[in-house]
Length: 324
Image (cartoon, rainbow, N blue to C red; front, side, top):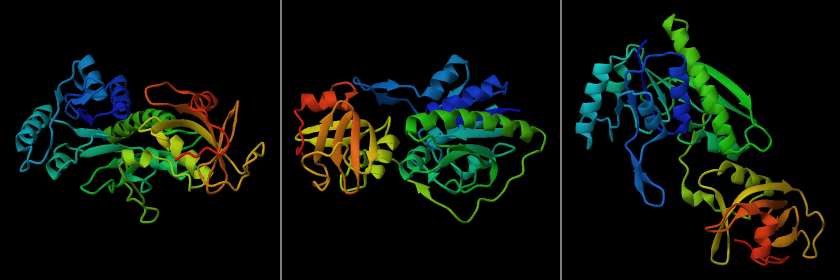
């Protein structure tokens, strides 16, 4: 079975590695064009491209796939590359480009997608972030037969897993990436023998995981402490939750919610949202609209991650100081 692979970030590279380790023939890898990154803004290859080159696999990097659009020349070259590859199936994982009808219809078995949620919950670009942010008790991976809709195709395989109490986007990403690779290997083995049974997605429980915007990183102290704790875990590692003190933007990497201040500070638990209530060795208590958030790990601009008490000391925080 010839498997063309389309994907870009680490999540996709994990899946590609699983397919290669399982012995599938991959005559072509498609990934996003190299992008500027790092302090020098030098062009960087995607994790999928780096793995493909390590394994001496042909790589295509079109800017777009519409044959009549701005990137028509790129699309035509990609079409020719796909025709030469002669795929039986295309596996797609976090590719980042919309697949037009001609791509979906070219492989004999169509295009199979690895989606990091239990569809139809969290269709869209950022299912892992949104699951953590919403406080979902479980997530998982869906192997889906792709159609022209946004993650609307029939389900081929699905497996759930429970979220840990302190799950972050980083930790959940790694679990789902590994699970996605395993499930796709299983799906392709079943496909070989006609053992896949597509099932339409449920009509109930549809939700959309909109793309993460950097502007969302800022914490709002007028939200509840538990909501803010989930916000911090959802934005770890990128873009990182932030708060402001004066002119400084401070990243918040770890925190936990508690229903009331312990020990009770002189300012009292009725202090305005964003007020520092206490600074002690284990963290910094900050008043929220509901409950108290205990900051545990912070990072000043240009600095490294440190215990919150150390950062509070460097900024001379004391009870009554206000964070934004």
